[in-house]
Image (cartoon, rainbow, N blue to C red):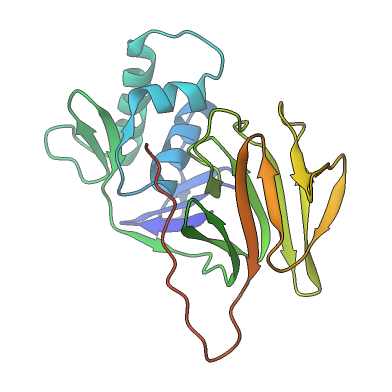
Length: 215
């Protein structure tokens, strides 16, 4: 993910946050927190969701998250009372509220259907899982945080299981490596079923709705 906001540029793949042309230092967990908040903007995320994503399977003090939020605000020159980037939702969690310009401009290459909703896929790698930062969040308790990957290329699409707890299935068969995907093929992640679709034909239209981040 590469985005720009205000005078800052953020690149999750290169692990860089730049203030103009100057690098801005963030600790690994603060960088991860900023990545999650930007990816889910402008939706506020519950503190519990952030704990689960940043400190998986670990019990931490609430002050740990507050410390990371403060680290972000210091790095971005932001203030809690008049936020430009990090908004506190009292009694709930946090949200990224800055105006963001996407530098990636990923090309729409298909979508998956989950619970009647169409979730867009981009060319390249799309992570499916329960984690809030997944490209396709599948909010089901039987789905692992990073469950599987759909890789879309001009010559076709494949799916690969990411050592998930409950497995990935195509046509009722559990996959162990990389498997090709075909138009309209159902995919089962744990107990959750989604359907893979390629982009509509030229001249047709599709209404794409983001998968809800909360139940």
